[in-house]
Length: 114
Length: 118
Image 1 (spheres, rainbow over the protein chains, first blue to last red):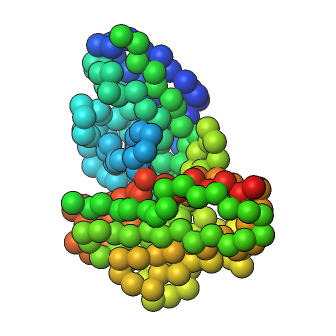
Image 2: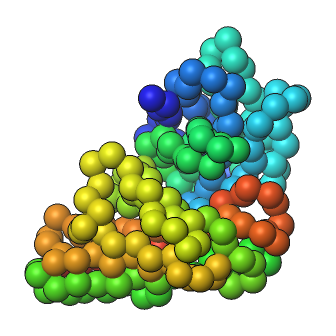
């Protein structure tokens, strides 16, 4: 069965600093990988996804993620964090038809210091 | 585009009563909808997958007689928590994919419904 681990429960970063969120997955086949952001009162929003091809994926809001098969990782990065990036971030692996069945990691809460 | 709404956003009910939560795709036809449960400060757990016009597929450990799912139209799925008890208190989130959504196979999530059972 697939699983996703996000080792960091909380991360605090200063505004303007870089951010990296870790994600490790376990899945027997080629994974469909996703990063979502959850803000209070709003539904989860897809930041980016990896299905195949280029292992460096660009997403919305200036985020990018790199798929590393050898490390079973899909870490999310942003070069310069804005106060509006404070939220909960979830990594997910998709299985089943077209990767629609999502298994989420435990999430990482990002706090942004002014 | 690709907006999914849920109603109500929060509900409080007495133990033993049933509660219905609606999930609507507002600007696309959702051929498939998913229901998740999120405990405080925890991740989302997939409960079931529903396809329009057919019975829902429940994940292992999810009681289908407790959590009734109906996907009667291409824009509406409902989750009914029957005979709710305090341990059913949680945040319930739906998502939808389907025809006409901006990105094929991308799940669009509703804002969630917080259920508190007294």
